[in-house]
Image: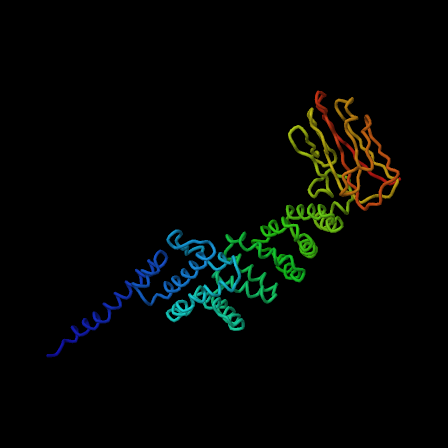
Length: 413
């Protein structure tokens, strides 16, 4: 019996097409199940390399969590979206290597199904005992995928181990560009690198560009007092439009007694004011600019032109209205302050104090005089910078003090 040509075509189409349809449907179901249940995805479609990789990686993360945090899969299900090697780096790398060794075979099995699986490569690399082979494997795998956080974390660790600060910083840059939400997890690593003098050049090159995470990192780093010397050295060679960072860097250096370094940063942050040498009530960069008080019942504020100061003191309040750090002038010198104080009888409750920078005790202290005050300083201690304080107090039971300072002039005699 001869099968008609048309019937034969239909038979062949069905014989080939039906299995393909079943495979296609199984693959679709497997893909849909991958995120929630890689076990189901793999059982439906055994050739699903992504599901095999996810199971291997999940087993690794669970081992780490069980060891370090006492957690199990029953008490806290493994997370697919946030779990990565970098989250689990709480102990030495040898323990992680042992955990990865247990997951290495299923990771290799996953790679036989699908050869480009970043988490699987990360596990195989982490399990590798030979440091040369491990480094080579990390390098090759990272060239296949530069977005996977677990793999990039190994690249970062390898470069740090090699003392390759420039490479480590560039790797962190790549990580943070792809995963900006992980800034606070990686910033401490950048700070650790920043503490090394050898890393200054690499940081200068990197932070000299307009990185999307640069300002956030600078704000994080400047809060760590250990970084200030290196941050100052880097700031001297890069252009930066970040007032808040410069303010904190200047204030931090002064607090450490490194006034010359702080003055260098001030000259970069406010070059026009230094060149003009004008007396101004500018308060952008204290203590080289004025530091003005602003509390309830005790306030000082520059006028719009910054040529004068207005202040108010409610009864029961007092302290430093305005403070400024200046290079110590040659003696003798005088300070002239033109002011208008109401009530006039309480003029004596305002004083000018001068002290060496960093010293609480003033070596010069005199009250204001009615109308205009001229303070003559004949001698001073041997210090390079002076702190000038304008102090005022409205005693309890007295009237509130309101006043203006129209002129502040310092000149050598």
